[in-house]
Amino acid sequence: MRWMRSLLTWGKVPWDCTFESRFDCPAPLAAAHDLTGLRFFRQGGCSLPKKIRFYKHLLTQLDLLDTTGKSKVRTRIILENESGQRLDNFLIRELKGVPKSRIYRIIRDGQVRINGGRSRAATRLGSGDRVRIPPLRLADLDRAETTSSDRWLTPKILHEDKDLLIIDKPSGIAVHGGTGQKTSVIQQLRITSPDYLELIHRLDKETSGILMIAKTRQALLAMHSQLQASSSRQRMKKVYQALLCGRWRGKSRTINRPLETVRPKPGEKRSRVSETGRFAQSTFSPIELFRGFSLLEIALTTGRLHQIRAHASAEGMPVAGDKIYGEKEQNKALRRIGLNRQFLHASEVTFVHPTSRKAISVQSPLPPSLLSVLTRLREEV
Image (cartoon, rainbow, N blue to C red; front, side):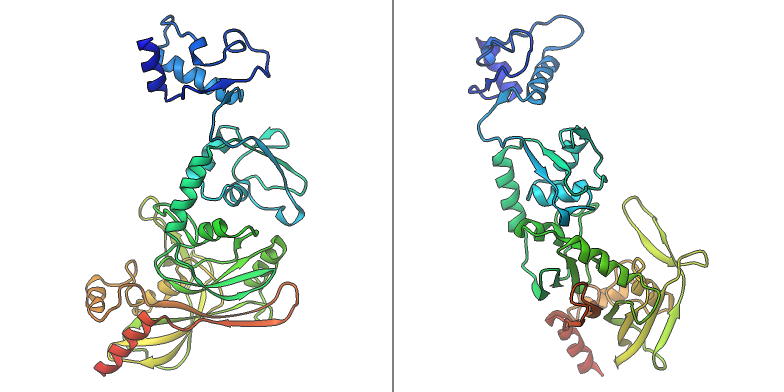
């Protein structure tokens, strides 16, 4: 009895587990009412702990292990407005609060199935597809959702209708999950909303301002077409405000410098000017000049990685507070006047609504933390 108690403790299997004989399986599994009916023998080349893990995994896969606090297997039929999205994104919304690592693990293990077959995380779902969602412990779901909600900073909503959600993103939170990111804007929005939500575009973690999110698949595709339109009349207009280190000379200037993405370290990406890079165009227009700094309005024609920051750095005037493209000593001096982030803010976006086809313009004023920095610079002039 002592070895059985230690076995159950080591295997972390509750005493009240029961089995359902819904499958033809050899004794003692079919006849067992609890784990005391199972016997493990030290024979062959497999150790006792490995046998325990094997049988526990076997019972779980056959769904014979009925434990309290565990959700049931369910099948979800994909609706028309949900078609076209990736399987992993669908599960992140469906299993609100479950860690991404857990979601990708159940996909790799084959516990999630589409129309009865195994699938990859990048598989695109179609209307009418039947997705099998495996059982997950309810306690884990509740704990994960509570933990995620505790980290959430509610953003200001600038515009919302049945197709679009436009928010004022604060600085310091990533818009999507990635290496080293424990939470993100889209993850938290999916926890608190039952709607279909997909990012239309992205902002850097330290950049604040307008962030657009689609609430339907059709709206997502329509907005993407405006971002990629070749004609300036059909293209979405995005405007930023940035404080650059240095004094701007002249009036508005369009910068055409091709950018390529480089990876200096694992999990890190940045852009650099290169003749072999992709076409990138930014228009810089001065708003206000200070002693050693310039406040500019920047309109983007393209949307490359770190485009404004890379173009500003190439001009010898990096964005103030930029930890990647800026200067360390200069950023240290800026922290003394209250700038603890990069001074880059998405201030305005103009587009054609995907359903009503009306022109819409949304603005976001500079946050108080950046306005206070400008006040300090005006005092020094």
